[in-house]
Amino acid sequence: MPLDIGVLVSGRGSNLEAILDSIAHGRITGARVSVVVSSASGVRAVDVARRFGVDTVVLDAASLRLSRQEYDDLLAEQLARKGISQSDGLVVLAGFDRILGAGFVNKFAGRLINVHPALLPSFKGLHAQRQAVEYGVKVSGCTVHFVVADVDAGPIILQKAVEVKDDDDEESLSERILRAEHEALPQAIQMFATGRLKVNGRRVVVA
Ligand code: GRF
Image 1 (cartoon, rainbow, N blue to C red):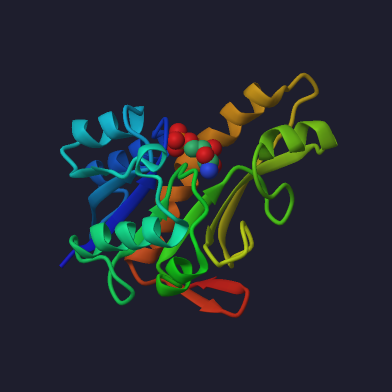
Image 2: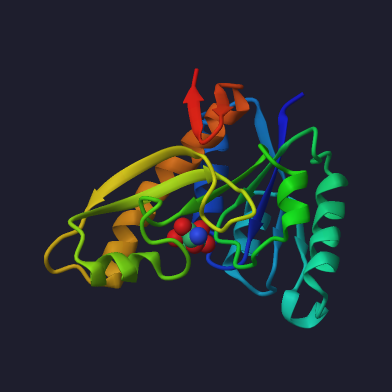
């Protein structure tokens, strides 16, 4: 049975596209995206999912007006329908703009990953690329990590560095980092899907 992946999105969906493209071209094997859940309607990510023939669920946070717990429960229910649970499958945050509650995060511990557009632990939170430009670092990049209840603080699976050029602004650096994300996230998923990731405290060892 292939690994069932649920991808959570909110907007552009370029990382989702990179994942689906990697599956289509055999760079990710033994896994399929079984459902894409979007926290917003009318976003490009939903069109991307449909183009690849993937089932989509829109849980529009703005119109649902649920508590965090209620929203997370609904999310877990949608994933469970596709066989993604605390004991099976993988949940990938790919530009998902909601903070998940500790209940959800703990339930999916070890099966929930995120891509962040900076070399963690630098520049956590929003606008990581802008933070990097403003700080004046010469190198930034992206991080794929397991999600824990603290934002952007989970064990690191892999990182890719990119150069920060003297004339970079937030937009140009974001584009360069995004290209690195499109390589890193599928690679991390492939490692997970083939059972190569072993978490030992804060450290993730790739077998
Ligand atoms: C990416 O930069 C990701 O690192 C961040 O949100 C952005 C999502 O882009 N968490 P996309 O929707 O995958 O194009």
